[in-house]
Picture 1 (cartoon, rainbow, N blue to C red):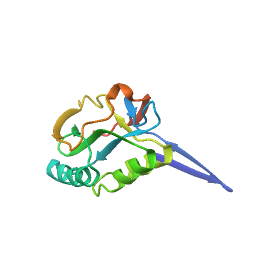
Picture 2 (tube, one colour):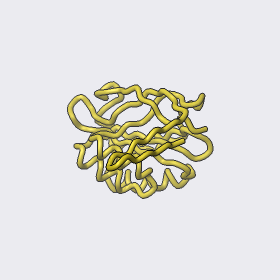
Picture 3 (cartoon, helix red, strand yellow):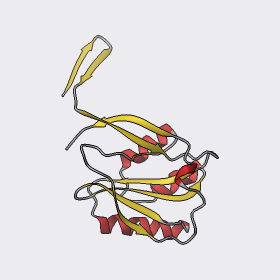
Length: 155
């Protein structure tokens, strides 16, 4: 529920919503580069795979790990081929089916963030791995920061 009230030139907004506290990981590595991350909402797995494969081929990327976050068709993906920030944004933006809010917030914050813990008892599970064209040049332990945050708790 959202309540809005305007007094002269000031708007006051009150939002009441159920939230979930989760842990996420940011794309930035210790060396300042970034891994690639994607978020897909309500996109069937074959379409996610085809879209990511096109980007993977175009950019000679390593393996892309695709995880299901919610049944039936919500996915996230990771690729451990590091990029400078500008190139990471360009590659994610080439992915036609990516959630544009995810891309927009990542650009605004200067890094991508994906949830890694369960939300509403929904576990994140590996759904598919697209075999890469190059070996990865970084690993999860190279990631610079993990974050606790609140997100809306839609079922």
